[in-house]
Image: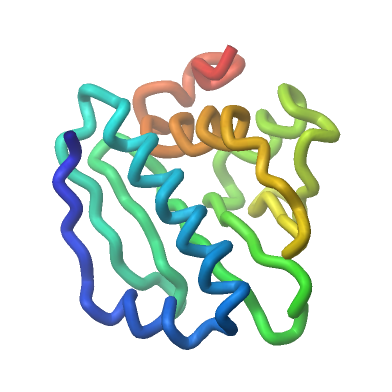
Length: 141
């Protein structure tokens, strides 16, 4: 079980979202924490703010951020480091399972049902990125 070190300011960001959005973002948070708990080598995860967005960092991973923006009110996203191989690899492996924003994000519409199994594979790759980045499929398949 991973220990979560939480910055108290994260909660205020969650509560600043419209109610429907907050539920969606908290679901992404649940998936990130659940996935971290399923990985033996991850003993802790930090929940903090990066660019005023809830962010998750593990010792072996690349930062994962989640957010909703006023300028695109019908969507929310999970963000990955744009210079990593994460999103390009997700595009190769999961193709039309997700919608993407360049090399930095998986985008969800508010009405989307999230394909949790596939998203957790993406989250796992990000949480373990420094251990798997040398693998062609980041250890996903």
